[in-house]
Length: 207
Image 1 (tube, rainbow, N blue to C red):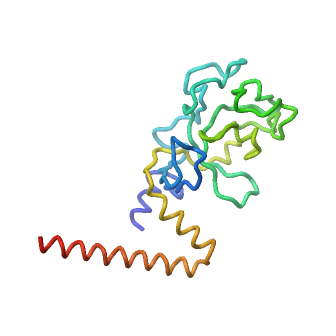
Image 2: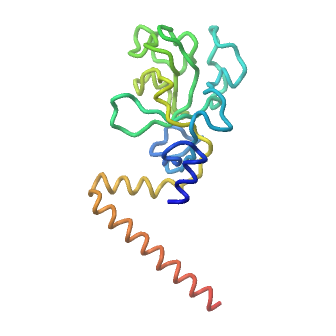
Image 3: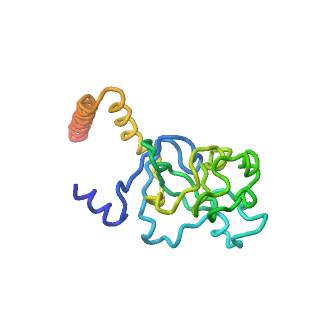
């Protein structure tokens, strides 16, 4: 509890650790990684930046957004009215309400013109986002509407490989067998870990 409280104090976000459940951000972040996140107003962050802003390019123009993928902030956001898990994706660029953002995006990440897309023109100010491993922007693929700033919970600071698997397995157990069975499973795993640690300690003492 003390460690959790310290992490919340430093990160300014809860939970301060996010287990990645899909491969949509590979190879930057792989499924099963544990991502450390911070509040969007915490050090070392300034305003949320997309690829253009990080590259120091102007905010408009027909070539805006055509920069090296992987330059924008990785953020955690939730879609309104969605009971699913929060989404960990990258910010491509900011847009304004009523804007045809397809003119500024990478054409390889857009399936059709603005008239053919559900989330174009932009219904409000916000951000166009995408997963590094996905072929399209979230707003082109229908994964999410233009992301309002208030939908963003946190920004990714760093990822620790494979440490998110225990959380993912626990969530799967809860979904499949219920909370009680998941608690029993966690207890068995903890007991097995304690027995293994004790055995290793005794072997080490004998050596």
